[in-house]
Length: 127
Image (cartoon, rainbow, N blue to C red; front, top):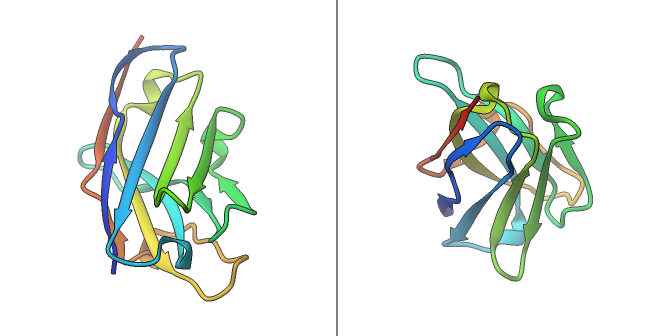
């Protein structure tokens, strides 16, 4: 398994941008399909975005399409989520997730498909 630490969250105004980072350690980063999820208190953890082993394919939830971009730097062992045009509905705790994959085209969109999670990073958007 891998260990992950998110950073980059904070308090911003509606319309602002943030970039979350997820630093990964403990194993070969390029062997893991990665994803971002978000969760509000008392609610389900929802899928945000996913990326394949070498970043060739990404997939976003409809709610963030055109605003959020997932990317990865395998040399730096870091996953990113660039968030633009933030609104109050994006206020959540954001989690990165990792799952070992054998095929470079694999990505996962369900939380039960991931077995490693970061501790979360709070994003708060004021309107």
